[in-house]
Amino acid sequence: MSTKTTFKRIALVAVAALGLGVLSVAPSSAAVNSDLLSVSAATAAQTTAETATATSVTTTLAFLAGAQYDSMSVTASLVSGPATSVALPFLALVETASAGIDTITAVASGGNVAGAVTNPNNASKVSNLTNGAAQVSAKYKVYLGTDSRTAPTVAGTYVVKLTPANVSTGSLNGTAQTITFTVTKDAGLDTVVSSATSILNTGETNTATTDATVLASKTASNSVAAATLVITTANAAGNETNVAESVTVTITGAGVLGSGSVANIATITSVGRSIVVKKGDIVEVFPDGTAGVGTITISSLAGKVLATESVTFYGDVAVIVASVNTTVLGVKSNAKAISAVAYDASGYLVGGAVLKATSADTTIVSNSYSAATGNTSATTGSTDFDLTGVKAGTAKITVGLATSAADVTTTGYAIKSDAVTVTVGGGATEQADVIVGLDKQSYAPGSAAFITITPVDKAGKALAPGTYTVFASTGITTSSPLDSITAGSLVFTDVTTITKAVAATTDNIATPSNSVVYRVYLPKVEGDFTFSYKTAAIGSYPGNVANAGLTRTITVNLSNPGSQAAVDAAVEATDAANAATDAALAAADAADAATAAAEDASAAVATLAKSVNTALGNLKKQITALTALVNKLLKKK
Image (cartoon, rainbow, N blue to C red; front, side, top):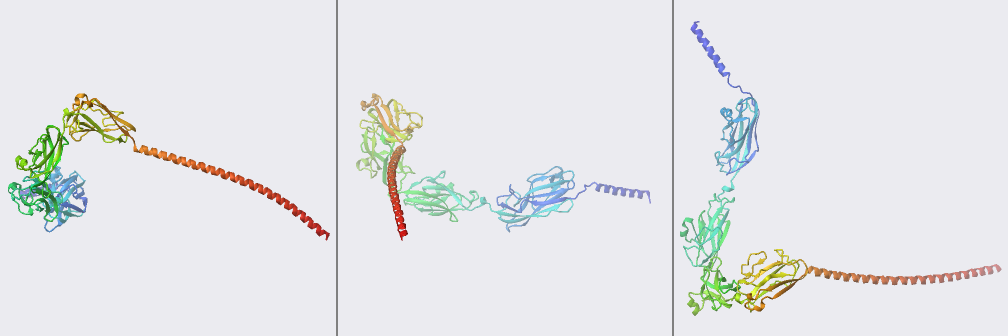
């Protein structure tokens, strides 16, 4: 053998030895033991709007690793599902213990990411992260989806299999698990209309937030809407976004309908009495020449009634009804002193009618063919009129329709209200007295009483609203303190403001414009109770100075109805007691008489007994003598 050959063989041996040495440095794997794959539940529920949630079913892979980097894995796969579904199971990492997930590199760098998702049919490897033996575990949420972030779209039953595997040695103790998923359609994703809200707007507007009351002329128009209806639909879960269905809108009674987009609100025209309205479109209501109420019904395509609205169409003014708002007018302009309401021949309110008011005596109330404060309300049909008082007295006011003041002068109103009477009161120069009254003459202790104060003229008529001095500075005083809200006796200042809007005070109650009413709480005692006041100085009563500086009193009785009832009951009880006493005395007398009779009877019996005993004694003696005689005669024989 040559030297060269010998060196070659030595080299080969060395290379082989080196190779064996390289192989010998690979990590050795210990056996994995106690491996277990478990699930938190064998069944799970999910909706078509969900992926992984806080309540998702979980699976846990746990094992005893013999050495660092010993590994196991778990794989999720679909066993069965609805025929049209493409959803598959996903694993989302929740937590780990002494474990790294997937690659050795990730394990070495401590790479565990909660929420990290493993795709269907892919093994998620769980490796021992510690340097030596350890108990290792990893928990995952299990859920279905068409991808890791998209919920399943098909409802039905799905069966998912979770398969464990021993990566380190191939041996396996744990067994596969199955979970049955029931996927239901999320109610929020339902596209079927189940409910609706509607808002009725006046005219061709769509911005109202609450329903308007719509009064509209019956005059037919194919292009000018009386009202606009905004409809918002929702599914059974109240979700508005996913609902795509149209609705059916029908009107009965007066009126016709049309629909279109908000952008075309000015060009929508009438179509008919029943129309299909697509989602997002508005509905307009048009007059059809008929007076009456148009009832609008909104229904789903399945026929469920979702909402109703109504519009009233009126005809020409046929009836006007006037009423008085202010009891006594002042010598001035009196705002909204009277009102009038217009009706058509069918009794429907007429909105927007132009009405005028005329006084029968312009020396008392100066209005002649006067316009209303504003045209008749489009929602209430009511018109308010300001009236100007000229001097004290009464005047009749008529409200009606006419084309000019000349028409009223020559022919009168073609259509008018019945005349209403208004009173113009005097002012401070005519004040002649003050009337103070209470609502009752007797009260229960502690109850409320109402004091009415009314300045009047010399005829006793109420004065116009204004400021009047009615009392001296002492005001109204009482015979004892009042249990009032203000916790003291009620005292009025020497200047009392008489207005419809009474000055703010806790004891003050708003009343008609010519009076002020105060509420007080009376003492909680029984007996007569007196209110006293002194009228103001002479200058306050130019209409009758004789009423100035007078002291007056009003006396009421405070009594508790229950007290008299108690007194009556006590009297009746006393009478009953007296009657019982008399009966007892009579019974005692009868008993005494019976006792005396008994005693007399007893004495008579004793006397009789004594007589009987004597007679018996005598009879005995006679029998004894007779017996002796008989014996004597027998011996002689």
